[in-house]
Image (cartoon, rainbow, N blue to C red):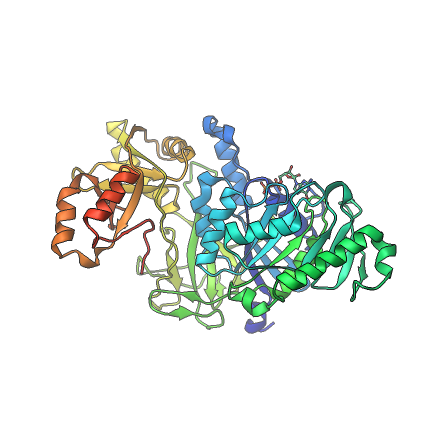
Length: 529
Ligand code: GDP
């Protein structure tokens, strides 16, 4: 198959949702369609449970599971589909943000009863900012939930999207009769049988046809006609171009658990979702069908075997082909590296591959060369953008608890930060080190892993910070900037790449600082224009 065709057949996407909306269930049903798994229950749930805070072995076990579900690939109707795992738990939100730099589109799952929830809002905001095409799947229609129109309003308002339904429910919960597929113009009747793989649909080009009464009953037929009239009146016609440019988001309804409405979602998805999209590097925009290989690291996973300290770096291929045993330039290190056993992912297995194409993810064994955001090329000095650090939520001093193990401690901290487990800040004033994390859970993970993988011990000390703000250095020579640096000395630190960060101890002090030094620009992420 030609290079061009290989690119066209790839769909690399992420499913995002608030925990419990049905992401794992939907993923599993999608894999069933691809024939990638034979039975339900084969996709492991990577949910990090709350109780894990006090159980290190549980954290380790769950970390292992999340390696297995990092990338799930399958073939459906001649399309190569790569699903990238995005943890829904908020303590791992940063992982998800980074994964979103590697997807070409997303499916957002929303629980029909709960509506738009907190994590969904945050994640969709990131997608919107990056103009990632979004399809919305409203799940659990077999249960009582919110009125479909109210829910569509909520999605528009809370998520800032412009939706247009491509399917519409006929009843809900106890009365759930099925779904009218606006995109395909047919009706799929709900039987509640999750094992049924192929659903029979009844074509209905025109819902005015009196046959409709015979199929769903008089009352439901009238309601459906009214609903569809309203849909027609209120929502714009679906436009693939607008979906691709992130100006419009199609919505599907269904029940993942019952494998209902999932086929419709998938069939539409493979038709409209983008193949690998161009990606901006600092130097230029790179398009998928350029012959020269380039890709970037969006995730690093430590292996389960603590004795080997072996890691798997996940590379998204942006352009060209990635080949086994071919030397590639590690741009940051300016070194050529060869990989004898790159892993590809298929269903929940990984295997060694000779060649991979744009859109694919390869897992490279790494002994500490990579950090998140690194670019690999055939020689060109490209630096891919779009993997910013966000301000952590929790901050603590990290202290060495075993003076004899200072070296392994630093090495351990260094490598864990490269993996993106947390962020390290070094205070300008006294060189003390501060760890910033998204969730409290990470502090325990770090302590546990430092001990078990590096033989080092650490303790923490509270350090009250409200937000880390990256300071735009472009005006660093003006007087106000100098004054800011002098007065706020105690609160200034460098991040791991040497960028200046202001650690505000409260919302109030942040506001005061901004008022007092209006020309000093503070940002909540490390990347800004
Ligand atoms: P995740 O946290 O988003 O991955 O959610 P899961 O896929 O683990 O689903 C959370 C719970 O909702 C599980 O108990 C599922 O069985 C259930 N669930 C998922 N889809 C449906 C559905 O369509 N209908 C009903 N009634 N329950 C569902």
